[in-house]
Image (cartoon, rainbow, N blue to C red; front, top):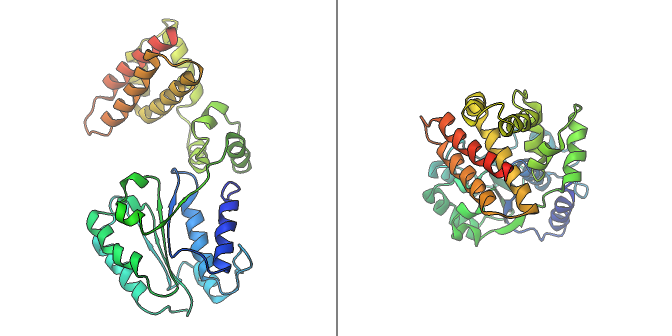
Length: 295
């Protein structure tokens, strides 16, 4: 278990032992925190026949089936876009039958906020009146998008986010190369997202971003040229711009910094539209950023 989630997992494990775990949990936290792993391990612990505190035994039939991803009483629902009503109805049907292993039944719904209204409504009755020894584990990084009727029937569990030192210490156990502390700060509450970014080929680094802004201020380049050079890494330009704006706000809040932050949010939304001129919107953002830095 990830070190920043270990205490929460042990608390839930104790509730399993004492039969005090709520049948429906809404597990919340930002993307890249480790919710999926946390939830899957909790589901596997519920199914283990010889668990030892917060550890599965790894040897019982349930553990062996879980290791092979073939446990008949562990059901997972997820979708790249939206979770449709048919997916939920099929999962509910499986939960309605007796447990194949004569133990618990577990349904995990990843990204529960992607359920359509129809699929969420189809889940309500099961949340209200689950069959015996049945557990529903829902995860989300956007709880505001989940129907109030779903929230009210679940116990809400907000997972703790790690501090900067914890994130950096863990990532260093997974990544051997040098790590820019400014890059860590950008993802400090999302260690898995940070690791994923670091493991990608870094064609556009934070150093390149910083050096480009310095060149802009010194008149060695202009905003449009930078925008053209950086358009393929527009998402990272936006993340680092927002990070820089947040840093400025901790030192002094000004109208120009606030406008820059608002502009970055606006550009983020614009870039979601197909056919948008990335060079143009990045040029406008970089011009505003340069004015803030020069102030």
